[in-house]
Amino acid sequence: MTAASPFSSLFKYQAWANDAFLQALDTLHASDERHTAIRIMNHCHVVNLMFKGHLSGVPHGFSANNTLDTPTPQDLRTAMASVDSWYLNYAATVTATELAEPITFVFSDGDSGCMTREEMLLHVATHGTYHRGEVGRVLKQIKVAPPWDTFAVHLHQADPSRRLRA
Image (cartoon, rainbow, N blue to C red):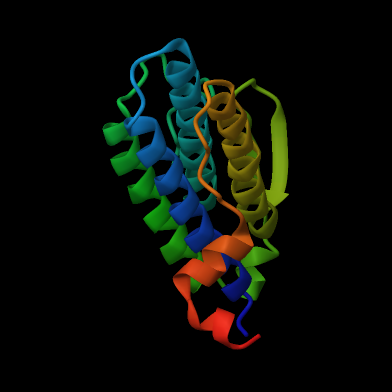
């Protein structure tokens, strides 16, 4: 197992879960709850872009952790899929030495920060999980079943033969 393989699994899961939630949001009629859910998912996208910038050494250009405009679910789905693909590629190629490298940066609120590449990847993955949980609660408030987005469900849907091994 390479140093990157747990991250590869996490980011495959993240891409799958993000897509499932954005598909669900696309089927909803316009409502305050739908708008709130899209804003939450857009926040995740912006944070993912910020940390992509930190990891790649390229300024991300954001001064806040969300955008002023709210994208459509379709546009956000396309944008998030692109960034999820970047994280999948990054996770597949990052070395153990690189994962341990600390990177200094500035948070969107102006505070200074320092995290290793590994910590940044863990933050991106856990941050998204937290906020998809928020979106799930919003969906339940309007009597819509949220996607079943656990890591275990993802693993078994991605590889149904896992069920045969039991």
